[in-house]
Length: 204
Length: 204
Length: 204
Image: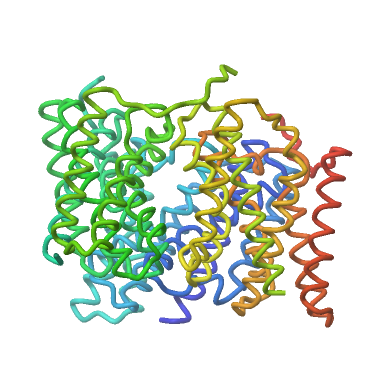
């Protein structure tokens, strides 16, 4: 379980760093700007979770995360300068990052003895806050606050699945795999079939 | 005193959740967006205070706050879809929220042995930061930074009243009621008589 | 060393408070708005560093910093209303603030036993985050994320110099002076000779 969470977190950091660089590219940032945005995207969610839980921030405790984010960002920056990368191509990897971060985040909160509702919210925070930071730094309304395909909702359902299964006695590793699968399948379905939530009717 | 602070905090969370949903409605957010903005508005101020004081975040310690914010947000969302709620109607309840949060925030900082100037600033932070988050998430300049009727100033005067009275030997509960009354009266007067602070003359 | 860091930090707080008021003036904020932005600019970087390191926030522990930021902001506000201050005039003092904050920030992280890569990033965070907050509060894309003369890069080189010299056995005070000189010289050269980093070629 520990090893699974560790490598899932590292993979999520790498995937988010890539999406951060791609967004920075669209804003014509320079290298330091792009690396900064990429790093913030990669470690922002887990950082907010740790600060809210008042525990040691994960990348301060283990600088391998920070080194991974920076290295992936630099490589992506030079690669993207050579050949433009389609944003579309990263919609599914982004879903993988969401699944990894949400499950890692909720589980870390549970182990810190957070109550279940708090732990599920921490899963969502870990999963989506990196992308919020990316959008704020690029001066646009965070995507997850605009009407669109299910995103934060999917992270929340996944986190609740993880917590519920363990409450029912399922062991942590199995629960983590199931929860990640739930997030991936729901997110892929939301993208494919354009599943949305109700919005306000009022036109004003 | 403890009970007063507890229920004042809970009431402030509920009031702020309502104003958050109303703002999200004007931006045509979907349900998850609206609930997210409402929750951030409701718990943002107290969260920043606790993080700055390096103590356990209040809604992580007691998930009743989080449950209240989410429940009030969901109810307001469906209610507001049926019949639009006038923003104007909430100017005075918002003043109540400001009074509650500022006093609760300053008192919590005092009990954490913060120096008086820091404690008064924590009162202001608790009172106004939820609204700042709401405005940033909705991609507009936070209202309190623009010229307008006294708002943060009123919170600061109230926090200083709370701290000063206790310094003079008045008991905590009385000081809290007086400070809340000061904030409510000043804020109501500011709205009614359009009291403003000096701004820069320079037109450029 | 302790005294050097203390006074360097206090000077940096004062310089940043001035630049914050000047920015607020351009946005026609009122006095409370300007003081809020100035205070956030002055203490924002060090606050984020302390929160990320999970240690006591410096201005909560010693309220002299907060009093300095507010007093300098009030004085600058009334002074700037009398006679407009050229933004240009503050480009070099701003470089002094960057040098002071980056060195103070990296050294504080080192003393908190952060790993070297983390400590260097903390130097950059302390040096530049106040300005990021100022720009976000004024609703513009943070300057350091846009193409322009070297800024964050210079802070990072300085922080690495500080850490590397001490690793090589140089005493802390000497290393701090050298690192500050490196930042000042590089930043002045970047402004003077318009040194920039590579950006994305793609025009889209």
